[in-house]
Image (cartoon, rainbow, N blue to C red; front, side, top):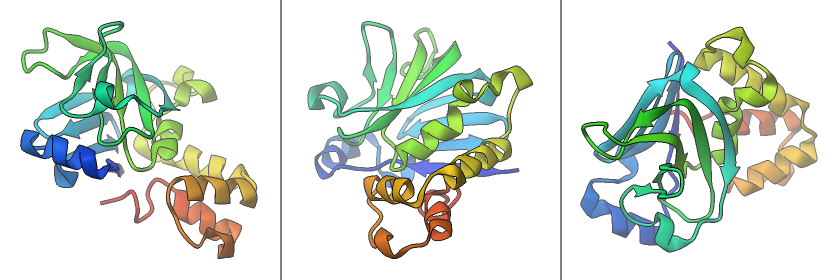
Length: 193
């Protein structure tokens, strides 16, 4: 079974704010498996079938008061946010609203924003809607990973270097296109645990 893990990117101030809540690097991650998406933020967990994901896109920056600390609930649309930095995250939209902020599941969320380290890769992996793949039926994590690898391969070396720099990779000017694709793949050492 293929499983791709996306760790959260922690800003130092956010790390201090969420540590008393049980949120730390070892307890904050998004896992995309063959048939499920699981987002863990300390004691809070959002779990849904992969075919419930309607799409995803990169967003940010975010206003600190709206994202620092415990999970945040949008009063406008009931969207949920698990944030560990104010710079960038991924908004994941669902076909059917999901449980998340309350343990009984009375409050359901149509979307979840997560501030993972590799936001572009997670968004590409989950944004099947843009590729017309939803008509095919449920996709597996392996199929989604393959599509993401194909997309990375279609980018120019300059586009790959720009994306690598955005993700904080150093020394990218010396890497070949093949090496850049390998470094940016969601299953690379920087995203797989």
